[in-house]
Amino acid sequence: MPSRKKKEEPIILITNDDGVTAPGIQSLVEAVRGLGKIVVVAPDKPQSGMGHAITIGSPLRLHPVQLYEGIEAYGCTGTPVDCVKLAVDKVLHRKPDICLSGINHGANHSINVIYSGTMSAAVEAAIESIPSIGFSLLDYSIEADFTAAAHYARIITEMVLSKKQDKHLVLNVNIPAVPKDQIKGIKLCRQAYAKYQEDFLERQDPHGRRYYWLTGEFLNFDKGRDTDVWTLQNNYVSVVPVQFDLTNYVLKAKLEKSWKLDAKKR
Image (cartoon, rainbow, N blue to C red):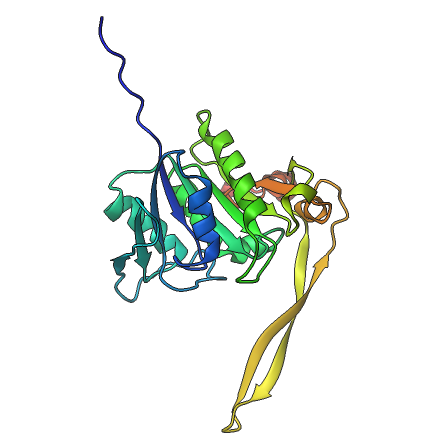
């Protein structure tokens, strides 16, 4: 009787934007141990707020790092998106089964997803047809407690790995900064319309030259109870499916009717 072929374990690519030595990524690695073959490729220094930036004017370097017992890991001189690209092409030599980004130190709900290096790495993986998840904890402290975030990161990763997913799947997962026993569960929700009312503090250096510090107040204009902001304020883990296709299909349909474009008349 022929023996059954052993199912290959999934390959899990892990990256972030806080740097390969950040506590958040270390918590994520430990959280998903045993779910597959883990490979870490992350920036060698903090890259928060880089969005979907890529490096085109200078060379990139990869440095092996010994941080995680039994796990192949590299620090990269580039951006989070660079890390995903290099990992697929030069480290793995194939597409991983899933890409996990995080756990970020700080919120990536609402408009933050646009600026986030954490989420841009996840989106880049989805562009490459790799299902991906970005994880963020609503605590910016380097001493943040990642216990609850790691717990839910494993649960959600297991759910995604348990069945075949859309190859362009991207989930933006945020975890409230409260003890695990205070989290009420997980909610699928939508991105809130919220933004920062920004201001620049103007100061002078010792030579009298002006410089600026970006500051701002977070304002939520969306009172819906199905948003990521509401979900997090009420101590649920928020899960927002996002996409890299930025087409506004509703507006496109309206413009097609109102503009009445006819190439023959132009």
